[in-house]
Length: 109
Length: 109
DNA sequence: ATTACATTTAGCTAATTAACGAAATGACTA
DNA sequence: TAGTCATTTCGTTAATTAGCTAAATGTAAT
Image (cartoon, rainbow over all chains, first blue to last red; front, side, top):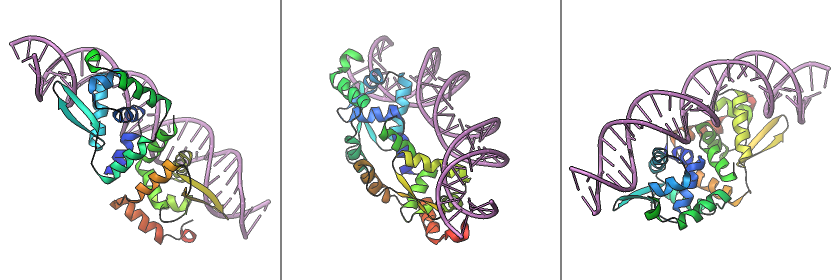
């Protein structure tokens, strides 16, 4: 499967698009994302893997947490795509972003 | 399902991405597309419906043929996305485009 | 070492998706 | 009205996908 197809497949899933839109506002660890998405941790972890393999997100460890964030300087196609996605403003993902801002990982994880 | 998700789902299928890339080079009727894609006409017709409902392609009748083409002036998100997609150059879709140029509907349909 | 966060695997549902052939229907042309 | 291109529907099959729980493993901090 070629890269661009992989990218569109990654984004063509509601849960993964929700995750991408949340990561626009802040870096998040798996358990924060899990608490907002409402799926199990293995499920969320797998979605993150798919996003990572599509080149959309990157991970870095922050002490005991694994932080996920949108890739900042990657492929031109992906950078431009992420700019386009920033303009998406839709009730579910907006609510997720507001929740994400209010969420403190020290209370959740 | 909200619009942007519908768009990514439409593009997250190899056959439909092939169709989009072919439509970059010319308007095509269903039987031309069918002959290049190699699926049955009902199948291709359904893919075109999905692309149409995502707002990516439009149709217009040209005599006995139904021409499909990429939307030229639509939603800003879609316009920008189609610009990004233009840069995709990958063996399968390139070959499709070359075939499309060489294809004469009067011989095929 | 133990704890905490994360990932992976396995085995399992359930839902969705893509495809087919065949047949009926539409839409338009000649 | 007969022919052609296109669409839709039906019934079916096969593959993929998303989700779960449970359990094992990895990784790093305390």
